[in-house]
Image (tube, rainbow, N blue to C red):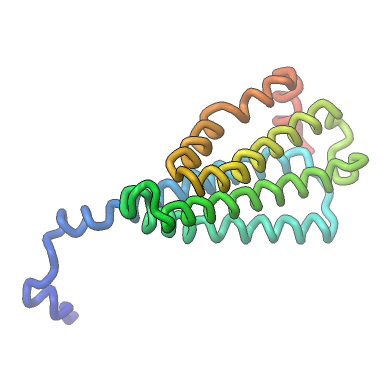
Length: 194
């Protein structure tokens, strides 16, 4: 096997130096993983109550998949134009954070649409799903959309403040809405087989 010319001539940096240059990409990859995992958990929670499907649900779900599949790209844009690289108030940093917020808000809006479509008149839901569960799930999804949509406007003023809004939501705001649903009802719905 032939070695690349740069390796034979010593043109490559040392491995530790090279790995340090990859640090932003690695951090972005890990962040994208956790964002996608969070969306997957929400998607799984919604679909644990959905037992039937129709063409509209399939189309909405496919659009949600598009929002998820573009997330790693958006995270790379977010890191490439991060406030640390371009300065807190730079237009590039503000637009990168706003773009990320727009796509995440769209993803949340699609999930909200999936839930509303499936839960209307229990059309696609398990019959045992309570109205209280439907409303609490919808409220949680609506909160996600509001936070991400609101962060777009915030990002145009302060990218850091928009990112802090996302972190605050992930760390606790969504859980407050779920506390309205009795713990027994949540446990029963989450673990009941279709």
